[in-house]
Length: 232
Image (cartoon, rainbow, N blue to C red):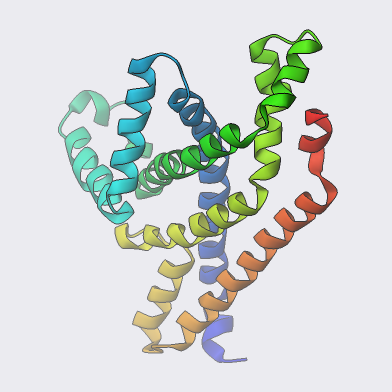
């Protein structure tokens, strides 16, 4: 084992921890937001549907890196100009690039996955909703117990791909000095002058994480997960 790996093992481990926390927090909050976006897009209230459409169009039509820069350098600089904000309990979070990355990733996931879930909801056969109505379910109960679980079950392969894309997007954290997995590799490269080896190491870690994510979704798809049982 190369000496630099053992010397920088703690830094790389910390970077991996940061990457995983970005992935989990952004996935949980982003998927929850995506459901709300999908429902808003399908709403009969025109102002709500149009607002959701504008949101998804803007977020999907602009590069994520630009969004991160706008949030971190734009909003971050704006917040710093207000003494009331600098003196509040929120300031340690508002000056930390980590939370700007989380914010940007959550909004991005909400936009992209929201459109995916909207398509899944539209793909649920009308017969299932009619059956739910025949069993005496209200429209809201049918949505929560039948349509949404059924759509999520249909979308598991697509959601696996979106989660992998989210994992790779976390690497953008290194652009605003957040020491994630790629950021740790860049520190190692700068201090050891090892150009390719640290990158190959983190690439292997990302690849392992990708296989893990795909494996979890594959198991969920084979077993049906609680979603199938709730849909039944």
